[in-house]
Length: 313
Image 1: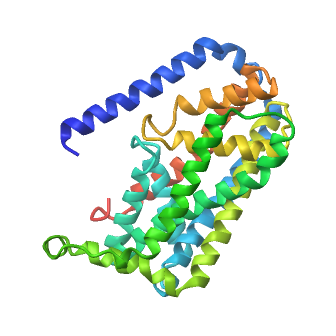
Image 2: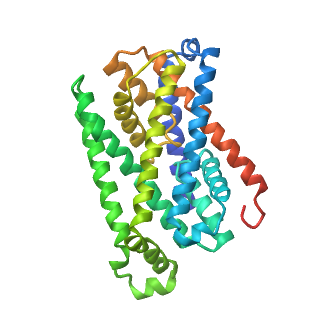
Image 3: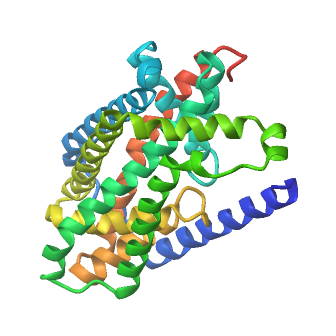
């Protein structure tokens, strides 16, 4: 991407995010939203931060496991530190994927495993999506028996789940794709990346365990979103939380805003208020609590960034 395209893309995402925030706060005044916050939230926020901490640990374990034997040579706390570093940059860079690049490159510089680390992080992302979609389709029949969900949400989720499933097979058999010799000579890293992805065809146990970790992560994510509502005095069943969270997360991944800001708030209010009849200010109050664990992750990442050797940062 040229500098001008990058600037245009960033400005466009900023406009979308700020427009989304302006609209939601015009529709649901912040003053009304804040009335639902009280000291009764504290135990639930502690619970949320605890689950966030565990989730980061599972992500570190998943990344370490996908690095196979090389992962065992690096301490677990190091992986946790780089996970935190990724969140720090995810909350600074538009798009939500910048942190993956930063932590992978930084880790590769330090331990000399860039290609395999890139493959591990990519597989982790896809496995996480598949776990989320799996939970979605398990919960969907129960939710549909209670109320109807707009067709466009359903079509969008089905399309994204198929893309994620196709991506897994593409990664596993990436080495079967013939790269032009001129390109391979110019960018030798491509061949390394092909081999790094194809390795998982011969390490089914590591691949399976990464999927198991991804399911645990999704369970924690559901519980965290459940706690957002409990913090403001509402109890939503886990089936509905599962379906609505999948829709929200998938939409916020679209590269049209700054890390989903502005879109997340509007989608949440639309789903819970329209379909469940929950007051919009309650939904928005619970949604804004979601920035607390993001801040918790970013602070940890900032500490890691400050302590990184200059050659890595």
